[in-house]
Image (cartoon, rainbow, N blue to C red; front, side, top):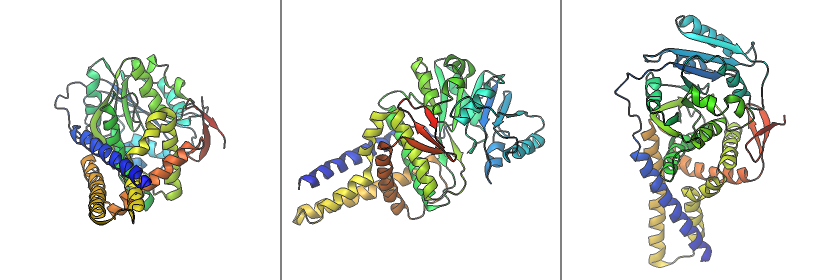
Length: 386
């Protein structure tokens, strides 16, 4: 009976936390656009590239077709001149000959983080007052630049970032990850903002004044860190600047991934969060609604009698239905247009798998990133192993 009470209390805490998370998400003005487009400072886009897939060209092309009044410089960096992504960039240069585009081959890396090493090389080529950093697999709407730079009118704003959605969950494993990203992750970020100002950045698309980047030591200060986006936002926040969220959502387009790849991705992400924010990471298990509801349901079978059992079963079913409806609404709110197959199964499976990821992240300090194995130190720095 004691175990039943313990799991019951934990289940209640998780549901209350889920309601809090849901309310925080619903109150955020997601997808709201700016009406005053007069603020259009010059921007420089930095992109570190490696390899390509069927979506790479469309993702990169979306940056060339922006409805933006100001000048735009686009800088790409690859490590190998034979990388097939170079042909993609050259084809875009031919399609948009008026664009200010440059492709750099960066053969010498400055640190363990190859992506940031390439960005450090591009930093010296920046000519505009606003820098935008974005991952290679990010596809953006035509008005992103206008909206992401708008908060930078305020000199107290040091960085603007935005939410992202996984746009093509083509496998069962990717549907698990899509629930994590398209429902839980962005709403949890907003939940944390109800407790304190955001002191980290989301790396899909970030905009900041070039002066702020210089102020924190540039990308060279980040070349050995795993969570470079977290470090960038955190260092700017520590200098007294605000981190703002742009309401416009961008899309991440990934090649099909199986369970092994998605597991490695989620584990890397979890260990990154554990290193950067150990206390919030440890407490995050309390918000895993599916885990505690399932455990409570299992231990309560045969432990309760009569009307109590009927009432408990009804509450448990209601809580499980709430969890599914919560995820469904958050996914819709983020703007995901496709339907999730077997939504109820995916939601509960996602929660149980995330509990396993949470446990695995507590033990071990290695991550696999783009086929390379690293050890992550307590300070978040990387050491390459394989």
